[in-house]
Length: 231
Ligand SMILES: [Fe+2]
Ligand SMILES: [Fe+2]
Image 1 (tube, rainbow, N blue to C red):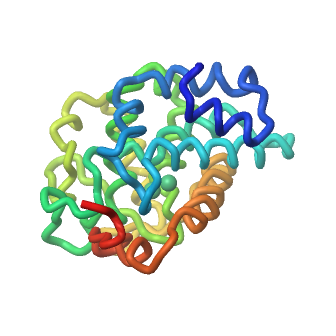
Image 2 (image 1 turned 60 degrees about the vertical axis):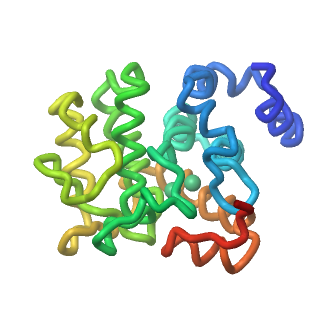
């Protein structure tokens, strides 16, 4: 892995790349992950989505290393996949949603889980691991709610709903079950059931707060419009 961004981040954090490379590389090398390291996918202000994910992953790794009761590989996989939504979300007219709870903040974990299963089927072969990864991705925005998943129609206004039909029924059922935890109407307000997901989610908050540099970026979390991004 000699790409600049990942090498810089690992060096800056004094992490031996051999400790992480074997888990990260198959995810990182995928063309869809590489796209998210470009300016096409700006995440908060001046940072790309790929950089956000990598910073999150490094913090998650460091947190998990201090504990003996955590499956580090699973926590890292959740982190690498948690924000692999379909289209960039800031200042994007094509990403407008009719219903409030279908907006990016509440639906992108569903898009991420659908894309992850589609792009990385090898990570979802084991049922037990799949449950932990899926639940971690889905509830990573807690305490923000996530939209309840309905596989029968695109009432959620997902940008990648067409992929749902090709996903294994057992995995679809896991997504449904996970979004039914803590259900209130068509949203779910629940922490991840597993500690790997909870650790990753708390790192995501810390990294995001550091990366949200102004009021426009903070407001964009709900509105999708960020005036601080240069057109
Ligand atoms: Fe997210
Ligand atoms: Fe994130």
